[in-house]
Length: 273
Image 1 (spheres, helix red, strand yellow):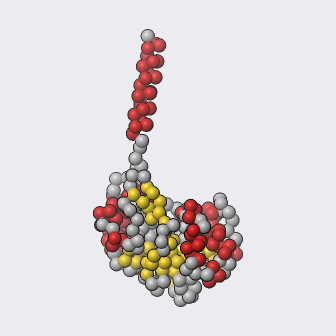
Image 2 (cartoon, rainbow, N blue to C red; image 1 turned 90 degrees about the horizontal axis):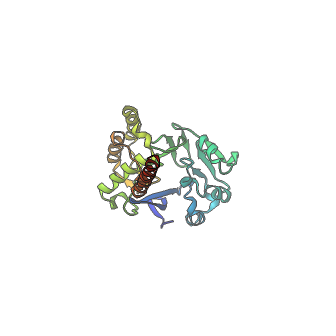
Image 3 (tube, helix red, strand yellow; image 1 turned 30 degrees about the vertical axis):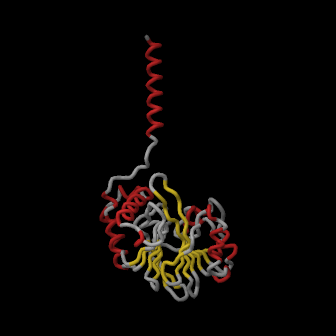
């Protein structure tokens, strides 16, 4: 865990990071909206279990938490979910049914604690209205992004995530080159299907976000972005035309194997003679 910071008034970032070999770090964020009916978006990394709950309960009493939104079922989004649900007995989990089914590989979420939703659904959460939508890029078929109308903020799940040379809380603290190079890297690595996608269909999803034009983009894997939505959407539109990303190979190991195979072939040839 890293120190808590704010994304907007009464919106707190519970931050962490993962090292990316040879590239930098990947931010891993959950968000607490301290509202009339407080909302937690995602539940941290498994490796942060314990410190994550301590950080969360330093901001809010567990009994006051009303909603927990899980954008999708990947482990870096549900690390402390079980512990939070146990402590926050008045909270209801909002997520896709597919996420519930996939979480069941680890443990069964109590059905009476869940409200399942799909993209296109809007919900009233006390003093705010949220809309669930499918973000442009994702790695889980269950993924939901969350648009909070009152905050004018899009909690974009994995979309607009970026690998950074070093951790930063806000995008204005990162050079444009580092931010957008990291975005291209992360998006192609996390959603390799973008290399196969119909660009017109992909563009329509981005058009939908452009119509909302949120002031804040709050990614699960990126610094806080404010008043730069157009730039992010332009960068995202270019992803399908980029060369597909592949992880670096261990060239030294490959060379050793090739030499070994050549030696075996030479021995075999010698025996044939």
